[in-house]
Length: 205
Image 1: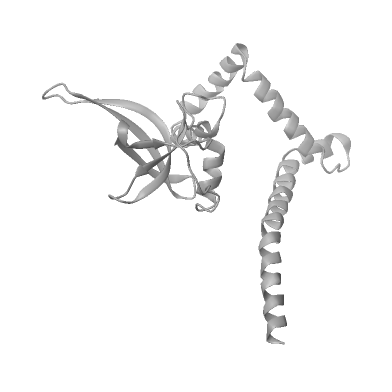
Image 2: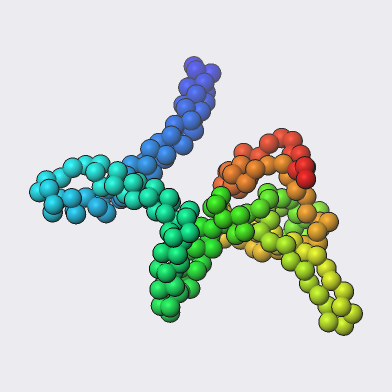
């Protein structure tokens, strides 16, 4: 009887852990659908006189798609830059907009200059301990006394999921460039390392 109970408990917990990601995903999609649909649905209600579930969501998707098309050409970028200048001239919004934009740009595949460049491993925060991170910048430090220059790498090491972390400057030779793509690296960080492969190779230049 105890073996049957233990088997049932084990199978139940296994099934629960299988279902939890699917349930959370469905709930997030459901919330996102309702949120986006609710932004434009009142407008359509005033125009049509009746509720049409999903129409606001479809319209929002189309608007985002059109903005994506516009932002990829010169004329569209000028329009976006115009509105960005408006935000940058408002003291309250300037800091918030800049921070959010930099964060979003880091994940944007279209912005090669501001996005994460490589998923790397560095020795941090102490000798013998290693951390996953994202290469964000290459910079040169020049000393005033002897004019000697040092080539450093700026690595963003997440400490709280993905959105909070430390910026660590390390020597070029202290960075291990993995063969893991950025999107897979993000999954590894969000999963707490569970999604990391058993074997991590070095990236080919």
